[in-house]
Amino acid sequence: MAAPAADTIVALSSGAPPAAIGIIRLSGPDAFAVAAVVAGPLPAPREAALRALRGDDGALLDRALVLVFAGPATATGEDLVEFHCHGGRAVVAAVEEALLRHPGVRRAEPGEFTRRALAAGRIDLAQAEGLGDLLMAETETQRRAAIASAEGAIGRAVGAWTQRLVILSAQVEAALDFADEDDVAVDLASVTAGVGALAGEMAAFLDAPTIERLRDGIRVVLAGAPNAGKSTLLNALAERDAAIVSPISGTTRDRIDIPVARDGIAYLLTDTAGLRDASDDPIEAIGIDRAREAIGAADIVLWLDDAPPPAGAVSIYARADLPGRSAAPEGRLAVSALTGEGIAALWRALAVRAGRLLPRLDQPVLNLRQRDLCRQAHGELAAITTDSDPLMVAEHLRRARTALDRITGAAGTEAMLDALFSRFCIGK
Image 1 (tube, one colour):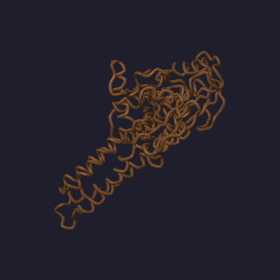
Image 2: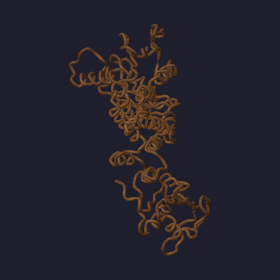
Image 3: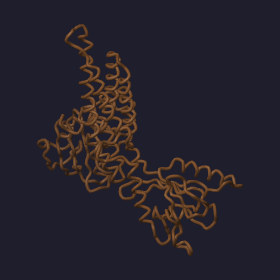
């Protein structure tokens, strides 16, 4: 659990040294006082100035740009100072040590700068989660979805839903508070109509894929009979020798998972053991069972077999370079891993299918935690359509608001926050 925010924290917020520049960040109530001891007179807020950084004995540590940011209008909501030093290991270590010698200053924990921003109301929980996804982003689609979350797209959508719930709740609560007044009556039909419209919008979000699909990748399983060319095709798609290739039937005994990014989309390519009805080899039999499990869990199956493919699979006519296999049967994509024939067409086919499975990037994308809370809120709204008791309607609306508040962090638990920020780097 994070230490109390009364401490002043310090950490390197740029890449690990050696580097051209090392940015050391100091945040907390004593940030300005400590920075002044190390750097001398501080520059005006938000104006960079060159300063000589010195240790306790007055020895020169480095000459660096110093920037001062006065709270609460800072990244953490606190007074904050940045030292843009030379990025050598010894320089960064010496400046950090000089700052840490002061009472009340300690090293930041993972994600603590962002956690303080959340506590100060500078960002909401959905933005913090988006920032975490942005730090982990490896493809263009991951980056675009994460930056939308980090910029508050989810918070704005949830905030709009919450505002509408507040208005609906006010209508019901007013009728309950003034039930004895003849001129105050609850129009449950109007409330129900408003609830139905809001539930419909939430349902659209729930129907969309989660952001985890972008991060985990589209699961593409290569399947078919033994010696059908699955491993060879896997290597061609991965553009490296990821799987052992041999003319000996049954070389692949277990599944091999290879992550690949192509045109901004993450894929997880899986090579599997060749399928056959039965095997006297117990190891091969286990591999066949695992292959069938992988096929069942696949998003896309590449079927390298002359037998009829499973429903929805992409039927591949592999080894099209071999004599007698130049003309692919109708409905099958001719591919040669040796010559490269059909590889580009296969990637295009995969991209089309992946596009149907990935979330749209022109609207906020929920993660699994946010999706579960949205589903809870949607369930409370759905219950209103079958409940005409104003007291129960008010309670369902209250529970729906609570679930939405937990998406943005207006209501939450320390344990969940600890889990979130533990995956951040120290300087965030």
